[in-house]
Image (cartoon, rainbow, N blue to C red; front, top):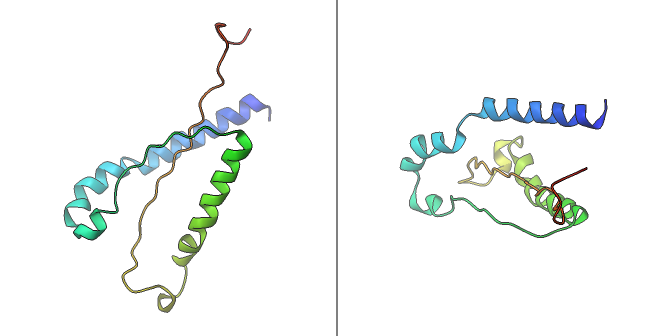
Length: 110
């Protein structure tokens, strides 16, 4: 598979997953948010943060986030006795969206 075919396959998979997931945020706002206790509602929200990193640094950030979340992700398969009282499922959505490379005054690739 060439690079362009791989890119097309990844895009098709992403689009299929996006379509299957539907409007998770809208559904949550309509069906869950009105019933949340205030202390849980205070922890909900959106973060939209732009960082300036190299590819290697972005890889480190992503690895650190995965490492931080891993114990909680694995907990969902743990016996009920191993889960703290009051724990409940929380969806954390992450979109990693690198910018396209900048072109110095030209009209794009030749």
